[in-house]
Structures are given as C-alpha cells and as structure tokens.
Length: 284
Image (tube, rainbow, N blue to C red):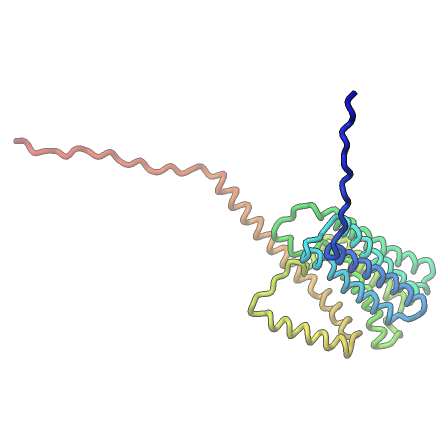
C-alpha cells in the first residue's frame, strides 16, 4: 500500500516594517477623519477642519511612500479608498450638517447624504480605472475632482466663516449650493490636474520651493484666508485644465490620424533606372 507523500507545511513569513508603513499612514488618516467627526459633535469646528487637513496630509503620503518602498498592494489600495470615503466623504458631510445644514432639517441631511454618496461613487469609479490603460496625455489628469480636493472645496464656507464671521458664510442655503456644486464636480467627467506625475523643470525648482515656503508661512499665520484662497484658485484653474486636456487630446488625435494616413498610403516604388545603351562605334 502506497503511503501518501508527507508535505512539509510552508512556513509563514512575516511582513517587514517597510511594507506596513503605507497602511499605517492610511489608518492614521482614517483616525484623523473619525476624530474630525468627534470634534464637530463637541462644537470644536476649527479643530475638526484641522483634523481633515491632517487626514489629507497622511492620504498624500501613503501612496507616495508605498511607491517609494515598492510595497504597493491591492489590499493597500482598497484600504486607501475606504479611508478616503470616511475622511473626505462622511466626515465633511457630518461636519457641515452639525454646523449649519441641520437648520434645513431633513433637506439638509439629504444634501449631506448626496455629498457623501457622490464621494463614494467617485472613489468607486477611480478604483475601476486602476487597471485601465489610459492614453499618455490623460496620465496627468483626474476624471472629476478627487475626494481630498472635494473635501477641501466643500469646507471653504467654514474657512470664510472662521475668518469673516457667520453672517453670510454659515447660511445653510449657501452651504447647500456649495455642497451640490462640489458633489457634481466629483462625479463629473471634467478633467482636473493630477500632481502624481507632475515634473518640475530644473529651472523652476528653487522658485517652486520658495512658493511652498511662502504658502506654509501664510498657513501658520493666517490659515483660514490662505485655505480659502487655495480653494478659490483651484476652482479658477479648472477651465485652464479643461483647455489643456482638450489641446493634448487634439494633438494626440492628429498624430494618430497622420500615422493612419501614412499606413494607408500606397507604397512608393522607385522609378526604374533606364537601361544603358551600348555606345555606337564609328565604322572602320
């Protein structure tokens, strides 16, 4: 009787700390988003906004750290999307409802739900496009406003209210219009610029670093006007981004059409070389 071969169980190896760092950053972002809801419930809205900003910082770091450490994984991508939905969809919607939208009762809650749902739809569409090969000109653009950008835009009335008072900017009607507009931008097909593959020319490195230092200085001394200005400039840049996207798409289409015409054209045969005639010799 033949005995079945004895298989030695494979030893389970642990994960290195480097591979865990991106997921740890994602979890920290999720904690910051949940903490923003807690601050809003306690009426500490400025701290709630700061928590959302911290979540945005962690969200911007986790993907870059993962690519730097070569530790990207499908698990990390899905965890990042869940964290984005909590931090930039659920948390801002709840914050705005507690802050002002509750004055509209059920209609205000419906608008908060609309914003969160549109954020979830935007993230789901992004996940379905992860394995889709995009044309080279589209690699520098997002489809619609990304979730962190949407959270930053929908909280602009809060920034303005912190700096200039609640008389106008805490109006539930005004905030409802902003929420509907931002929700529509997130699920739209409007191209927005992506910083993931942005390359800075060598001649502009020092000016860009100087500009970042100036923005950081304004953030520490006058955070709410600075955040408001950043949000307004982002909205103003969308028409320029759409124009740039359409220009690159037309150029790519022109190159494709030119290549197709070259392939469809009949091959040019070289002209035949006339045969050499023998030289006539004079008679003897």
